[in-house]
Length: 150
Image (cartoon, rainbow, N blue to C red):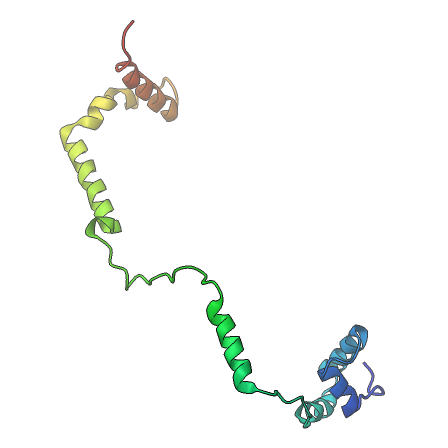
């Protein structure tokens, strides 16, 4: 922007009150950003005393606005915070982890995992396929035992 284009206080007043077109407003905003000297006229226009229309009955206006706000539909229940909401003991995450750990220990100590997949199928000397193939074979052979025989 050039320093030749200086806007007057009246131009800035028109801008503040929205009486300039879109292109003029963009031009004035760019000028305000690039020219620090323009800020003085802009602030003068911004702080100027203006005669705005007087509200005839401010109490009635306030009451009308408040009654409309009250009659608006609510946006739903207000969600309680975590501290306000009390959870039962079995809803806590720690309880679920403890149950999973206990079940794992029970299964390990009872030998359930050994019955599902015999250990000899995963020994190093057996090179009949990849580890995934061995697991798949063990799972399908275990499931085949439960199928009813024709």
